[in-house]
Amino acid sequence: DPKIIQKPKYLVAVTGSEKILICEQYLGHNAMYWYRQSAKKPLEFMFSYSYQKLMDNQTASSRFQPQSSKKNHLDLQITALKPDDSATYFCASSQETGGEEQYFGPGTRLTVL
Amino acid sequence: AQSVTQPDARVTVSEGASLQLRCKYSYFGTPYLFWYVQYPRQGLQLLLKYYPGDPVVQGVNGFEAEFSKSNSSFHLRKASVHWSDWAVYFCAVSIPGGNYKPTFGKGTSLVVHP
Image 1 (cartoon, rainbow over the protein chains, first blue to last red):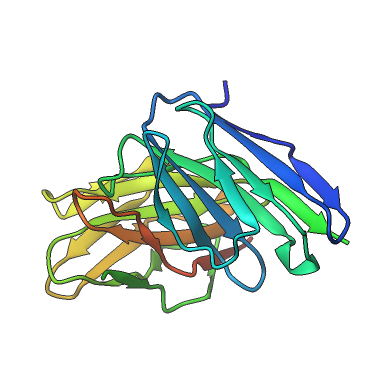
Image 2 (image 1 turned 180 degrees about the vertical axis):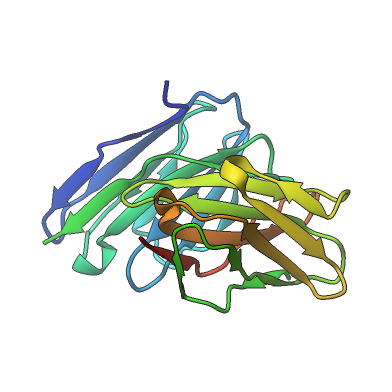
């Protein structure tokens, strides 16, 4: 059974629209993260959450907003989409935010036209 | 702050040959170190991890890595590469404790020839 679920697997959006990427983890972890991967940047850290609180934000744009409705959920809302936002977005989790190993979801591949 | 460098963007080996993927880190203390593997169109999977202790750590599928404080390195090795090892490998470093996330290298793409 998949331990980290990301939905949808593929997503196509038009420029200027808004999308929400879903992430749920069933590992009992207390920390969750979002990463972005594209041809330009191999693996780019975006956000970290611990116990549903934002711990670190390395995303310059406010168009990216994480949302944590439950401890094991961390969704990513992206507004005013741009073609440069096209990438694969990975959700990850770890037991705590003490630097231990992370577990990654399968990713959502976003294409913005 | 910690950092990690993977000096080889791409490594090509023949099936059955031995493998070493290089990773150098920068941190004044003893960090946590990780190797992750990413197969095509999949997420990253943990291959092995180093927490302070035995410098040689064993991972899945015959992979191992050796921590060297003197060289600030954590190279990944495998005695005999299989075609299924064709993937991208990421080295990561983090600071034990506190609210720190791992810092990832840019990855090394491993190509396996028959």
